[in-house]
Image (cartoon, rainbow, N blue to C red; front, side, top):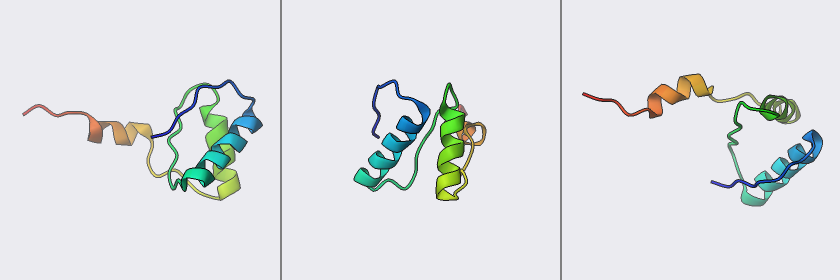
Length: 68
């Protein structure tokens, strides 16, 4: 997993994400639903004409530990 800690404007952030994806040949991007996450996801979706695989709400119960 790759991450960076910088404060970037929206389109600078999108450009950095695209460059990072190309550099590491990424096929999936996880975007947190906080601050600029929603606009970034919308713009990346628009540019790539792609849709999200699953939302966090659906994914979380599958990853949460279960007690028997």
